[in-house]
Structures are given as structure tokens and as C-alpha cells.
Image (cartoon, rainbow, N blue to C red; front, side, top):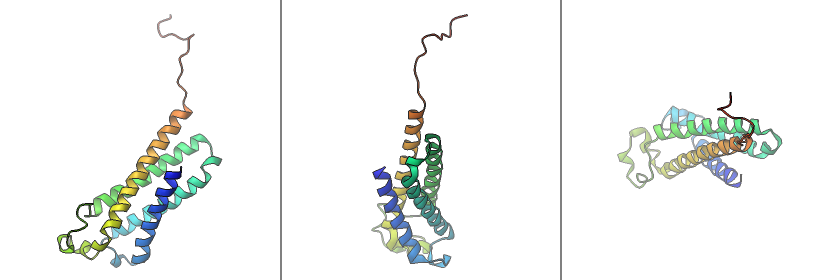
Length: 152
């Protein structure tokens, strides 16, 4: 859980910084979809951190369900960011004129947007791994010696 809390904390810092800079006005963002995706990522960061604090006090079944829900939200946030943003790790050093006019003024945030996307995908994968790990821990597979498929 230490990697989960540190990664979610880093994502929370990046997302909240971009939201703080842009404010509540959609004109300060490259697109409305990007602004709303930042909101999804902010909610998911806070929900993940609250889950990490209280996960020891809830049942295993509820832990599995919460990890599934968090995986859906992390995957949605990362997928929308991947779809909306023109930035990739190798395009951050390109001049702002190479990007769409909406994103050209936002090109100085390229490294942060790429880092946010990477952390969101990492948290999605971590939620999936935790969900299946808990599921396999909960379900016990063992051979039953008195049961046979071939007895009549």
C-alpha cells in the first residue's frame, strides 16, 4: 500500500496544481473535456487516499469492489487524458507551434500532463493487481478427494 499512497499523492499534487492554475473558468484550459478529466482525476485521487486510510476496517469483499471501482475511475481518467492530450514524452521539447492552437498555450505544462497520464495508468494497473490479488486470496482452490466427475 505504500506505493499506492505515494503514487496517488503524487497524482493529487499534479492534478491540484493544474486545477489551481486554471481556476474554475473553462477558458483557462485547452478544452472543457480536459478540465472535466482533471476533476475526475482529482476525485479519484481523494477517493483512493481515503480508501487507503480505511481499507483495513472493511471486509475483503468490499475491498475487492472498491478496487474495481477505483480501477474503473483510474482507467477512465487516464484514457480520457490519453485521448484528449496531444502531449507525449517525446513531444515535450517541441516548439508550441507544433501543437493545436488550443494546446499551444498549454505546451509549457507538457511534462506535467504526461506525468499525470503515466501515474493514472500506473494506479489503474495497481488497482487491477490489488483487485485480482484479493480475489485469489479470498477464493480457495483445493482438491476434494471424495468428489469425482466419473462416479455414477
